[in-house]
Image (cartoon, rainbow, N blue to C red; front, side, top):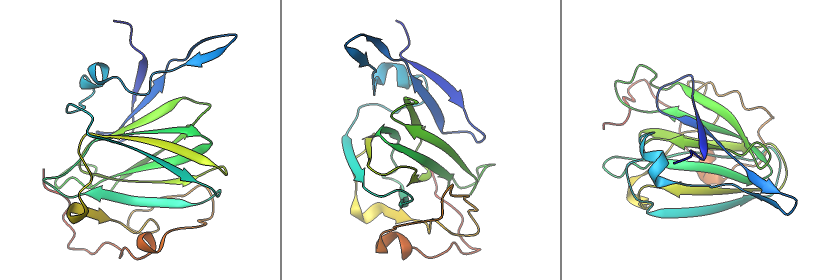
Length: 187
């Protein structure tokens, strides 16, 4: 089978940047957003149980940092299909050598990249353009009782958002900064 993705390891173990191959001609192009068979070799745990779309209207908007607590952890494949974002994954795995470190990558309609994020990570992004649309593929369904979040501007996370932070939901602004006793998520 010809691979439809090129995988790139990032500065911390876990998240993987996937570049989609575009196949096209004078009519346009095709790129595969998800292939479970190929993603199994990168750790994807099995079937897709949920797919979500988001639309963000304004540049500099921050959404996140969201996660699901065990035993309802989920893998995510995040793809930007319109506009551009700075996408961030924060390692919350208890005992991980990269605990509370993060990776940030640009995803855009132009660069045809996706970020594969394992369970045990918080996820968020900042819109780099107006009119952003994203597709999220999830390995588990959303569970409100397992939802957690981190304050996106928490000094302990030290995320260097590329733009001054614009709009943010009240829910995301209300997440308290991490305390010294935060030990992370157990597997």
